[in-house]
Image (cartoon, rainbow, N blue to C red; front, top):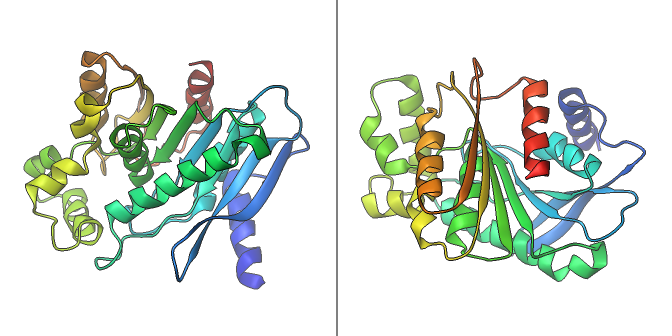
Length: 275
């Protein structure tokens, strides 16, 4: 009980009140059974709506090895305020053994399936699904949106997300950020962190030319990001646009990896909603 209270209190302190009068918040809905663990999601939706709601799948960051779904609660609230239906999902964290990026993609696929199966219950337009994430969540958002090749996933949003593992590995130097990247890859791709084929397979940029249906992408990245360099988003958007997709990159001047300026984030989301 105390653990739950402290978690909710921390979420409120970081993101503000969890719900407002016009928003319905539902916590801890099971969406995927992984044997010894049932994955859960939190739902943000308008109290009242007319017509079908666009669903958003929110994927938290944390370097693939940490993080919790409440980190996406602020985004979920903004989406519901604008009339969307947002689910902040949990996924299995990379542990260097049984869980890695592939298992996380499987969990995201499970969330997509849950949305489609529950579209009638919640009044959703399951043909217009948007994936959303920050940092590692941004990477998983782009990777799932493109690699699933699902025409019902029509939009992808990334904030500070890496897109190109092979180029990152080649460009890495002795900096702390590169050391962190190499360490995390050992957990996210257990035993295969040096495998060039897997680094390419789990890079969103590798899947752009393989998708066969339209995709709109919105990316927010700070030009002072010392953890995930800005070039990840620049090269990804260039490659997407060259393939005929719509990719809009918003560069937050002076911002670091966390993109802490709330006004910048809200302005970015305004572009997402108007897309």
